[in-house]
Length: 147
Ligand code: HEC
Image (cartoon, rainbow, N blue to C red; front, side):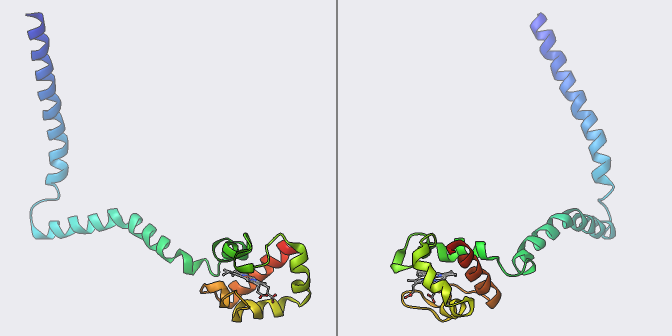
């Protein structure tokens, strides 16, 4: 009997809570229903509500262009390291100072030219699409590391 009583009161408690929730939520939704005018304003409100998210997505999509050229370290790690970290294709390894010394001696402009046009087994621009600034940055990064 006691058990039955408590399950009954749980049932009533549930019904009361549900009724309160409906009483609170229904007016909120009912305000926006009705004529077409309020429907379109509800759509506007939905637009406004998703705007911060939409703006964030836009900002993310535009980020690469807005952030300008990638820096030398980024280029090196994504493009050049494949060969210059391992010596693949006979590339001078980044930490092989003896291999770099005569190349560094030719000067930055010559190295930029080698990278731009390709040299030996190295394809032009290391096989990637790089702007002039990015080529310069990558060469400067390599020169700094290989010294
Ligand atoms: C496919 C492998 C490969 C990739 C990728 C690559 N290199 Fe090279 N790199 C080489 C090889 C091989 C040489 C040696 C070429 C030679 O002297 O015949 C070389 C030489 C160089 C030299 C010396 C050029 C000279 O005049 O002696 C520089 C500077 C250089 N690489 C920078 C880079 C940079 C910066 C990147 C990334 C943007 C890059 N490399 C990507 C293979 C590569």
